[in-house]
Image (tube, rainbow, N blue to C red; front, top):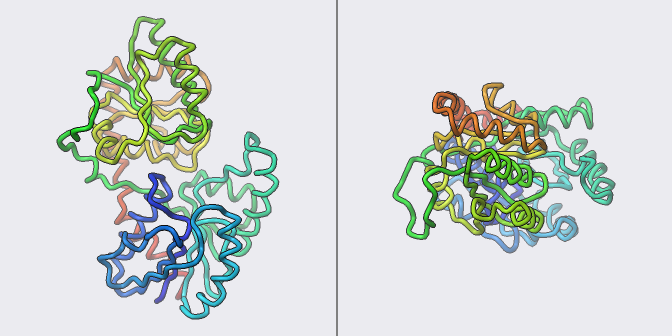
Length: 365
């Protein structure tokens, strides 16, 4: 079997999509040595280096840029027809939109349906709907990274054939290790929020919750770790306005070792998002054996199987109450950690790679 993987949308930046491709497809490739994989990398990034140790991988350096959807589409119109004829694939996987047309069964992975949300700019929604519809109609099957996303796809385009293969985590990466030398001095106890600083991450509610807790006599330091996704200005302004600058710290550009050390050192992880397709920070907290408190959105209930501690997504008082419960109650914290220990096994990359390999076999048999 010969499988093509369109990796032209990936790069070296920290993101859930990049991590999924590198780790999940790395596990897939290494556990199916009888399958030949053709990895198409973007013109400006050497994605093939992630699989340099794999003898069943052919790397195609394309003329397709990773940045800019329109540029990628135009370059792809020139590149893909001849490339796909040359490689004679049995299966082709795409990871971005618009979906590349191939004369073989095709898979399309969808991480979320943000372009359909009412809080997105009108232009994005107007463009996003037909692009998504085109992708779903041209893919033989769609992979959703959660049951929540699969349900959103079904609501948008009924009868779309969807498979759920979750995102994963490498638990071994989160085994406590010596702290990196550049790790700042940490409070004895602190809250941790990890992820790009975007509006949908709802960090303002979390900052307000810290202020509520202080007003009640409970000082809970908060470390926000992530790069700016367009919302750092409002978050920083709110920190100043509420006078919690001594409690809240924003850390940019943290490397993997620092993030892992912060997970290991924190008292709990808080994930207050208003929208996610999955929630990598939730399972990373589980892998780190740390209790996690989340907003009450559907995908977090899916990940926690109803066993988590959550709060109404835009209510800082509810967030403060949930945080205070776990902060002050070691029995509740231990319950969440024990649940996470069990649940995180479902997100092991070898397990997910087995699901993906089985899907490939069904589609090509």
